[in-house]
Length: 330
Image 1 (spheres, one colour):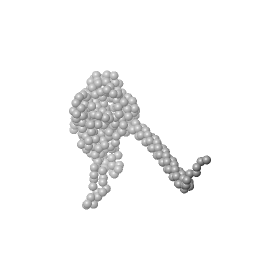
Image 2 (cartoon, helix red, strand yellow):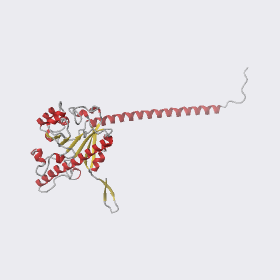
Image 3 (tube, one colour):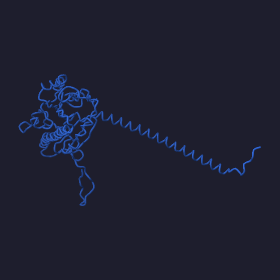
Image 4 (cartoon, one colour):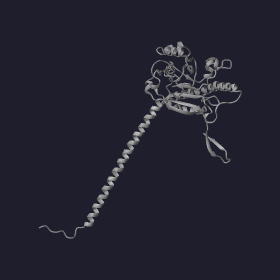
């Protein structure tokens, strides 16, 4: 016969233990529920981020950095395949396009690009695109031989008499020198980009200031252009500056060129930038500067961006100074 345990069973202690266990179980379930909700929210945010990234990618892929009814001067065109592409795709009206080459002649370009240049050149001529040779990105006014006796309109033709120069674009600038020392190579290309910015400003001012003056003369000295937010309906600043475009590859050594700093040193500021979407320009075949060979890695597999710069403008700061005047800040 079993012996009875001494003492009475503590029913209160058992109930308290059960209640505590139940409470702990409830806390565990609550914690699990919170974690589940957090995981769901994280998944939703991840999906939202992915959708936003996809939408951003689609927007960037659809960006063409100029309007077809604007004018465009292309610098350093190589085999002229980019010029052909934007005309064939309808991004630019041929009568609004000027394509230039650093090389001296058709013969020189045929030797350099024997399989592509002539066909592109013939297409552009037939479409009515203006083509210039021996055009130096760092000396645009001088190399185009623009002077008091040979004005812009004489070189371009009478159809350009009242056309503003809206955009100047330089795709993937390269000196072609093949400098092995990276620091020297970077400095060399910085000089090229700086010279391009400075030269573009000079050409904009020369061409557009004259057109602005001519339009004012036709209105008897009255300025009929809009003011305020719509002060520059043609995108031309008071000094005559339009938009300066530059396309470069991502990564080194291109990041070390510091193109935004070079632009700032020229009184320019970044207006916008977008991915250079190779698929938008199917006829464009990026080649080496000195031959028809592809670069080490095919260009269309390399990430690149197009940067649009405009005249630097100070942002208005509504905070008043001690004299009650509104001050400007950068």
